[in-house]
Image (cartoon, rainbow, N blue to C red; front, side, top):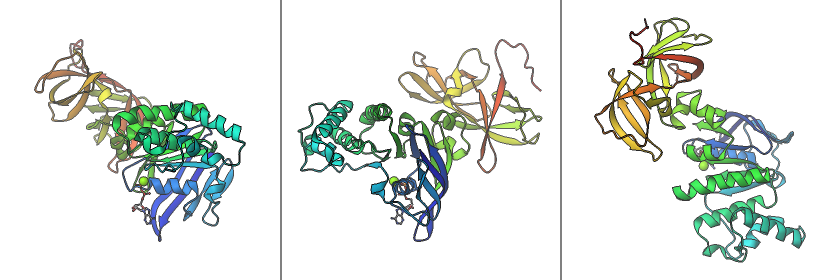
Length: 368
Ligand code: ADP
Ligand code: MG
């Protein structure tokens, strides 16, 4: 549906997005995720047709829309846009706001589409309300309904939920995802919030300093990040040291990691590996001890920050009925299925591996 190919963008000769490439299938939701100033809005505006590329192309449904030579105007792209600051027409009621992009269609068809969207957004009966009488969340729903009304091929949302409070975001983001899926509408959400990107999107591109580090499913970004930047930006976790023993195995404080297909790390070399909080659970079966440094209650579970004997730190999940306090020593059982290894340049490689760890049932430690 959408293909971004080696797109380079800039202002006054200064490059702010370099060599961006990704594709989005019809009905799929994407997200551009990254810190402020990394080039997300610039990339979104180029997709909408407001920026001329310095290099590369934007295509939709096989048609070239942007090249350094020609840019098809935004009005001719079948694109809807929603921004952080809601800009409803203050003098039009909700129904007329939503119908704005439907001018030209028969009145009955307009009314049907407006009623359908009001129902989808939980705003049935709101058609004659004026924008100023709505809450922030209701106004943003109307803005989304207005952008979706003409059934654009692609809906672009730039920080569309960032001005809403956290609690409201938690309900509206999955709600909008359901509506987009119901409408089978492709969409891209720009955001700096990884929870929001993960809750909304099928595919997420993690950006930093004008570069897309990785474009992948949320699960892959979280568990198989291709760079230290992605690992740190999309979730919590710790980096610990692992030393290559031979061309298949590495040793860390967690035990011996056997890489099924072998690795290319020189024996004797030490690298960093990624350990997510959910890779470690508190379980008495383990012999690995950590001292709790910090406890954070997460409702369904606790997360402990623990210090190991070699001073490395690990985050660990414990069930919420467990009662421990800082300073307690607890058993840490690793549940690592993949081994994510970072080289000195911060580039990540993921290996399928098995971990032999230190269990209480073992009488002797069978490790070299
Ligand atoms: P993000 O949306 O990720 O916060 P932007 O795409 O808005 O990032 O900005 C990326 C970079 O481009 C920033 O350094 C910003 O200052 C610069 N920039 C954005 N818009 C313009 C503009 N119209 N003219 C010049 N520089 C701009
Ligand atoms: Mg922006």
